[in-house]
Structures are given as structure tokens and as C-alpha cells.
Image (tube, rainbow, N blue to C red; front, side):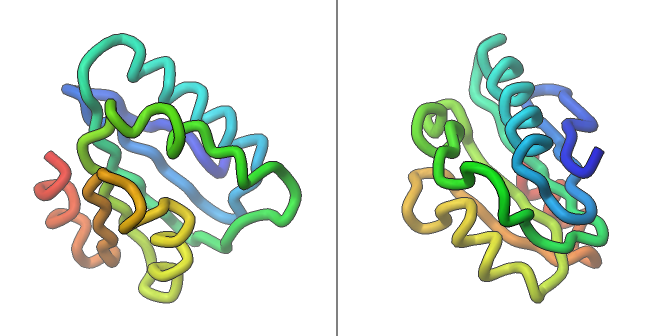
Length: 118
């Protein structure tokens, strides 16, 4: 799977995204994250990309539940990816438009991303 939760410990959800991100996979991961948040408390996200190739053009990318209903349950989002994707990923996550702290890190900064989001 190109998008999945690979860790859920102490309020930190770790999501791995690889290859071309497809709507169906993203929606399934989003549902799993919402279920994890329903179990109580605020969460933080560490999103790790590997060989990320962008977003599939098919799907309802405008209807992102996480950005409209669950922001009050999310403390921080750390994203690790290649520099060429930073601007698009920040637009996709709504950085600067949401009350959540969102930071982008490059792969050599993965340890820094983990420390920041913890």
C-alpha cells in the first residue's frame, strides 16, 4: 500500500507514503487515523515519504475530513520528504491556514522531525 499508518504509540501516528498517492488509499488511511483519534486525546502525525511521486489526479481531493473536522484533536504534523515536494505538500496540508503547527523536513532531517513532533 502506498499510504498507511505504520505506528501508533503515545499519541503519535506515523504514516508512510510511497509512490503515487491514490485517493482510495489516502481515504482508507484517513479513516484509520480518525478512528485512532476517537480513542481519546490529541494526536501528532509523523508523515514519512519514500519515493513519493505526487498525487493521482483521480478522486475527491477537495473533501479532506482531517482538515475540516479534526483539527482540534491534532497538535502537530511533521512531514519528511524530498525538497522538491515541500511547497505542494504544504499547500495540500493547508499550512498557514490551519491552527496546527506543520513543519516540513528533508530525509537527512528525519531524526530532527521525530524529535520536533514528539
